[in-house]
Length: 143
Image 1 (spheres, one colour):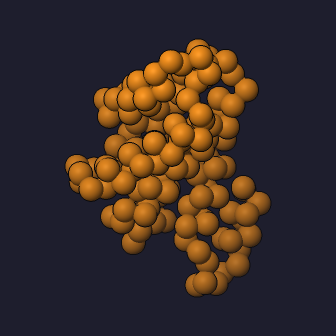
Image 2: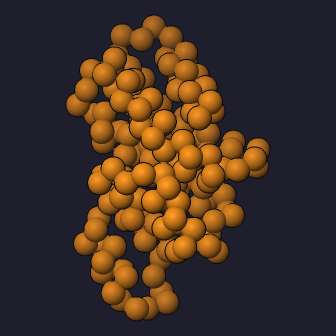
């Protein structure tokens, strides 16, 4: 991801897909464990025009959730759940600032959480998969 980011930054063209730049930066920064504050500073400085859009908010949510999936894919369900909570807590400020108090934006970002839950096929052995999804969503909303 950092190689893609470097190539995009060096290209000097106005034709750069800002979404690709954001995705590459998020992937690289999350993999390095950069803080919410560091990511917010970069996004604020480099994505001012996109900041208030719903697609931007969804992109940030999707980036954090994809990171969470990468970090938990080889873990047991119990370990994955603990790691998911840790990641959500780590990036709560970023996710909160991205959605603000806009209910429509929050609902659109909720779709990203639902997609994450669906892609994870819910934890094996869970008799009520929607309860797991509801718990993840409620944890997210508390942050």
